[in-house]
Length: 281
Image 1: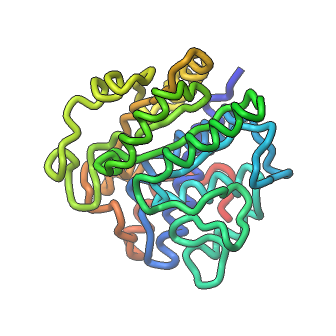
Image 2: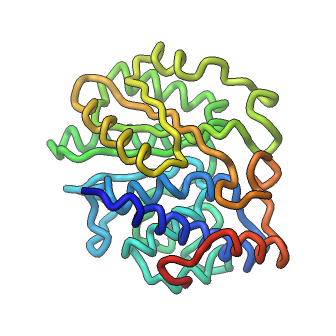
């Protein structure tokens, strides 16, 4: 049985990591990272069948995860470290020159857990589809997961990939859209509205689920429901409603924390709202 409370505590700790990492270099993207912390924790500590201590780029015999909206790297790095991919104290090197923890994930320094450079928006789903097809060819029954942002869906390549995945019955793939309604320039509906997003994915031939991404129990149950829909001829997408900046009251409800680092006072206030649960790095 899943320890939901334990996962919630870990998500709070991950949010502390995010604030500390971004504050210490005055650079990064706290809003979406905080909003998706619950998902990252649910995946890496409960859902994914993966081998942190035996990382390989090929990922044979395990589930794979691809982060398409790579600016959420702070959340991903925190969870990778805390699930055993690399030492926790390496989080202190975030966004510093010549380190493995760059602002957007890269592969040239060989950071365990990262299989593709990301952050150029719109590309991750295509990569995930390729990985999923590779697993099919190799008769590997494991799944591929991909996280994208809602503003990222304004990129045409996403919809080309969506058409392809449905047409080729890539049914070992679960895509997740961080549907927080905000992007760097403002509300998504004011930049380029996505319209009826659920209807779009259904029309593109995807099994389509929805969930509140800031309620751990619902995240776990929906991910498990998505897994039940794999292997049935359709790719699966989860529209995940989140609140940008979740967990820190003054960062919520606005797009302004998409890519703004907190100053000393703001970082102090944020940390006061996030109880240390697993030990800071």
